[in-house]
Structures are given as structure tokens and as C-alpha cells.
Image (cartoon, rainbow, N blue to C red):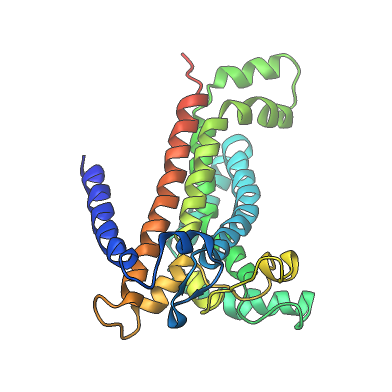
Length: 288
């Protein structure tokens, strides 16, 4: 009940302030969802440059976190001894407890120089989406592994014993029996982790860049500019941090734009969580 009231309150506040933004003569709803240029100084308010960087960070984070987190969950659930589990669990808890600003400086001072040394200084900019996405992926590994392990533990022992009785190896049981049986819970873990990655703030604010990457459809290259992860790009959360930290007057167009971005971000994460709940309800397997 409390969470529902909180959600309604957030929507009301964001919606009210966002409505003030869209009621100004300099902004139109059509431009907000169709333009690929975000430059408030010249009254260009196209949300797609910010959405693009946000989705790229989330996509890269998922590529990093899902394989590592899922492999960790399978190991802890099916292979690890009590001693190994006692060692790995605190490590994951430490990863989850590190402040995100530390992750941000880790991305800027370690991951970015590593990428520049491996791929070339001319290819990888100092502020880039790739390093932010990689570190956000490391950040959400504990979330993926913890929720996935819970889903794997919920699979009945009888399924494992039946598979072993038919001659299946430990690996075959893990990959062909346990994982499919826990698919709904694992998928929910991935969707929730994507929501966490999209909502991450400090890592992208420090490592990804402090200016939206605008582009022109048909003029800029798809992989050289629009989808290039090795150049800078400001995410929605990073832009909110940068703008709200400045000296903005109340009810100015820049100030109100923050709430429009926040409402868009809220609707994105809410949609992902609703999708997760729907998937779990649709594919959940109940054992007696």
C-alpha cells in the first residue's frame, strides 16, 4: 500500500512539473519525442540523445552482468561447497555496498585508460559510454547473481535427482534442467537489473560525459556516431544531475525540463518492472 501511494505521489509531482514544461511556447510534445537534438540554450528539446545514451549504458551493462552474474549464481547454487559459498557471498556483498561514486572514478581512472591502451587513443575518448556501461555492469552483478541464485534454489531437489537418475551429468542438470525451471525468476532478475542500470547516476555522470550526443538522421553515421560506444554521451540521469546542480531559477524552462526527463525515466523503469511481473506470472512454474 505504501509503495503504491509513493508511486502515485511521484507521478503526480513529476507530471505536474512536466506539464508546465510542455505548456511553454518553446516546447512541443511532438518535438520532444521526434527530435534528435537536445540543446536547451537554443530551445531544442529532443529527448532521443539522452535516451540513446541511457539505453546504450544499460545494454553494455547487461552484456557484462548477465553472463558473470548468472555463472556466479549457477556456481553458488549447484557447485560451491559451504566454504566457497562463505567466501564468495561476502565478496558480492562488498561489491553491492561500494558507493557508486567510487565506481564512477574507477571507470574514469582505470577502465577508460585500459580501453584507450587496448583500442587506441584516437578511437576511445576520455569520457565514453563504454567504460560507464562496463562499470555499471560490474555494479549490478550482485543483483543478478543474488536474485538468480534464489530462483535456482527454488527448483525442487527432486528434479535434479531425477535427471541424475537418467544419467545426466552435473553440467547437463544445471544447464538443461535447473536453468529452464528457474527461467521466470532469472528473467525477472535480468529485467530488474536493467532497471537498476538505467537508473544509475553517479557512474554515468562521472565517466560517460557531460553533454548530450546529438545527431542528424541521414547525415551522421550509424556506427561511427549514433551507436558508437567509445565517444561521450550524456544519459538521462547524468543530465538531471548536471542541470539540477547548477544555478537554475525556479520555473525556468531548463528547470522544468528536468522533471520531463524524470517522468520519462520513471515511465521507462516502471514499464520494465511491469514487464518483469507479467513475465514471472506467465512463465512461473509451481511444484508440489
